[in-house]
Amino acid sequence: MQEGSELTYAAVAARAGVQERTVYRHFPTKAGLESAVWSWITGTLTHTTFEASTVDELVAAMRTSFGGFDAGAPLIVSMLRSSQGLEVRRRQQPARQAMFERCVDDALPGAAPDVRRRAAAALQVLYSATAWEQLRNFWNMEATEAADVIELAIRSMLAGLQIDDRPQVHRRRRT
Image 1 (cartoon, rainbow, N blue to C red):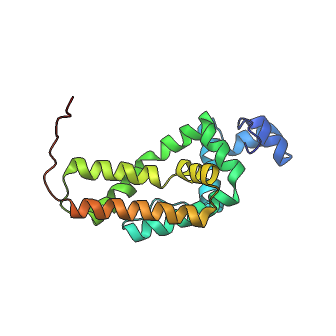
Image 2 (cartoon, rainbow, N blue to C red; image 1 turned 90 degrees about the vertical axis):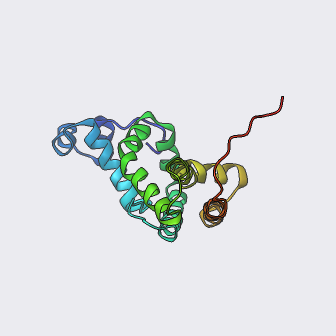
């Protein structure tokens, strides 16, 4: 996958130096194989978990993940670009979403449901391999500096939402 190839049983077998049926024995489904690769990436390379419940825990997790993204950049970029990577990330979405919602609930108790939902979605966009990649490619930032940028954005957004407790008013645009 680091070289842009699709994850296949044949490719895994060739790379591991085993017969293809051995790979099938360990991973009977393609989804199982993909999940195993993603588990290795998140557990060994990026140390990504979806356990954070506070903003401080989220920021710490993001810093660790961004360091792993730098360490395995070719593989992370490949996962971002591939349909397989997208499918694996989609399967993880319930756990990711729950984490971002917990962090927002902790940071913005009593906020309106639509504000909490949008803030959680914004957290996911900020704490993502895509955000890391943008900062890396267009701002030439290493993991630490990229994490500093994302932490600033996260904390600023949440602080702004804490201050702005006025009812949300939708104003018409003047034409």
